[in-house]
Length: 85
Image (cartoon, rainbow, N blue to C red; front, top):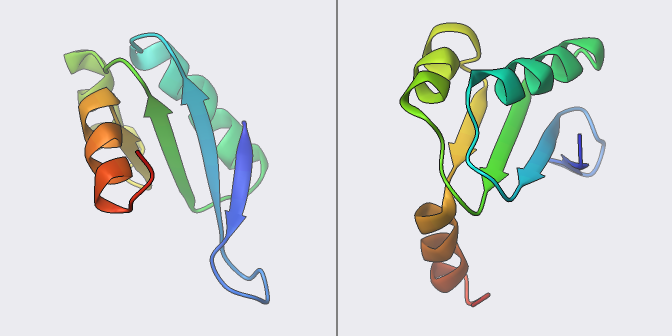
């Protein structure tokens, strides 16, 4: 895990973040999922500047509904939308 964001001042809910440069398949998401479980986390965001394989996206839908995937194009759009790029 690369980081965590407290959703509110009391820290009752935390979003864990994993960032990567390369395209990711299910194995990287499984590892992130295990880390989330070990932290008893309910939410995670996996960001890559590249993309996710079809298998990775299907894995998240089937097993890790609490994980949001953000690929390179979506990251660029979010950066522009929020004035960060």
